[in-house]
View 1 (spheres, rainbow, N blue to C red):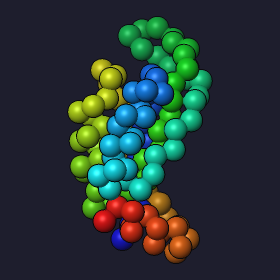
View 2: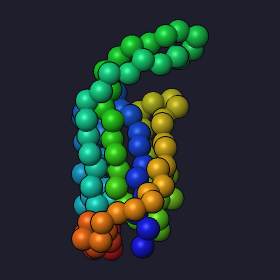
View 3: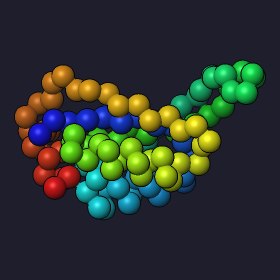
Length: 103
């Protein structure tokens, strides 16, 4: 099994926490890391500066399509960030836990 990381940003902790719990419960993901960040970005011809929550979804390749679809369906942003990071190397014990947690 190949691990996959998906990144997305959310406007509030509540907006990411609800979906994170659901995804872990139904074993789509093994884990979601949530961190408060400061973002500077261009939106509708203006430079915006705001606090957001960065979510790192940890799953396996076979679940990534379902995960991306669920993020898109439930995301509060008009244009949600859904970025896949391909992993080159993961220690075996962590990979074992990831696979066990998503099956």
